[in-house]
Image (tube, rainbow, N blue to C red; front, side, top):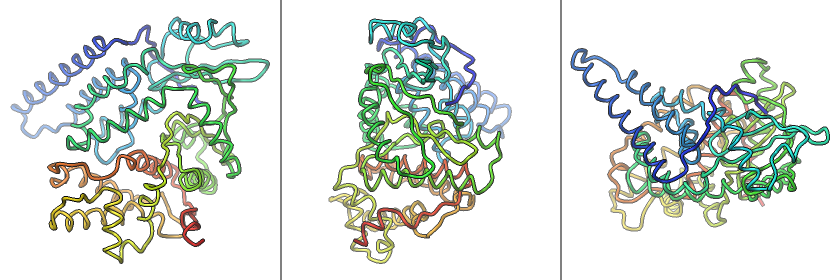
Length: 446
């Protein structure tokens, strides 16, 4: 596991609705002030770009979300992966939430242990690091030893589980402005996010899912997983083996791995997602680089099964039927699939059906391209430029912005996030991966 240097430590986290609302209001005032300053300067210099404004706003918004932790900071983490829709200043700042955020002070950590176990961590382990080795959105990780075994102990921040609904309600205007979704789409998105984040704060559920999925995926070459310790875990504390390895950016910078190693790691991650999607019908839906720990021998460790999307069987069939080449040659079949996926609605006019059929067909042509060849080079920057440019068009499309209903099932949100994160990670690696033997295709042949 990583050992980033945390430069800040939090002695408290706003836990009440009033305290957290006040923090959001303070941030709103700062952002408003930044706009006033920007437009005052623009009077003097009409050619002034928004770069300085975006940088100031990104700094203020991230600082606020870091203080609040929980679902507020988790939104920053999720948004940091959408490089096609956010200004670069937000991407650069929000990426910090993938690896490190201000840590919680030791007294609050000890208090959590006493509430969960009636013991301090120093009574439960032979040694326990006083400082967090890693701090993220929902919890932070401490290093511990017990009977000679090195352990990672994840401790949840106080108040996170109780503040999800109110936090998402307050963060919604920021998110809606940044990703340019209409009201219906944002409501659909927020409802799904709330359900997933509520599950993510239950460490007992995370441990059960971690053990089950790790065991099911143990046969996949070049993957490794931690073991978990029920007697040292609770709803707010999770103890597991400490995994060695580095996240992608640190690994690439330090080791400059060969293309063979890049491909080996990339293939392991691709096969991991393919097996989950098509055999387990549930998937590790938090594929940001901080959750994959890479080693020079081409092996990769997988951590953090807090965010797992369970795929309803009926929706599974519709969602993955779009990677079949038949969809591009049979328009009647294609429109049936689009209705099953809720891209097309029962009360759409003929003009809307024609427009959205053509638009979403183009979207599928770009997004499913890796599946339509035996191998795919995720280092192909021309492809990713096309993918990001389409994302920009999607975010700004007037027909979607003005639509009275959301286009797409809520079940697609975390599945699309999983694949977008997978593509992003493989692009970081510049990996060339065998994609044409997906388990989905094997199922169709039976």
